[in-house]
Length: 188
Image (cartoon, rainbow, N blue to C red; front, side):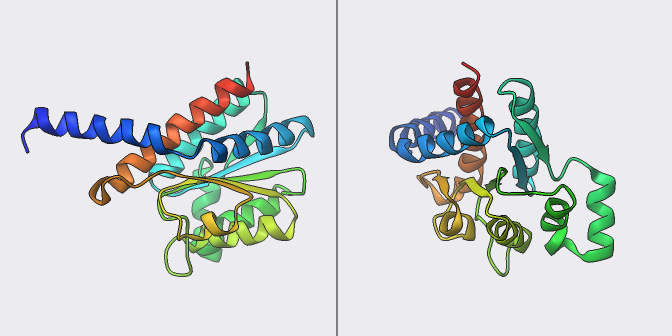
């Protein structure tokens, strides 16, 4: 495929996702975040790889624009690496949630392609389990409906898979689009 054809195909796929993404799920996430804001709760963003970067960006947007107190649990590199060294990677998010007194007024927001499982991104699984134990809300934007996030979240936006070879790219694109959609709606 030549460059121009690739560009055309990628943008067509992006449009196809825009036409098929479940808007009711987006609204469900917005409703939960509106509730968190109204009760002065906090949003804890988690993700690995690209999801960590999106979580950091979202924490900025939610704090600054939507006036919702947030934390991105991958932003404090010293704490992240100390916990990884001392306790292991699997508990790095749940440990921080405990340190920050995550509670029933709070929300765990997950950005992930797969959504976590017993063998991949178990740190997301343990964070979800901890949020459930504390009776907090869980939302996510993921690329697969088979992961732990899609199964356990109170509301989860699943980015439609229009091309398996670009599932990561499209999921991460749409995580940022959803962030901007939600923040702009919550601050309007």
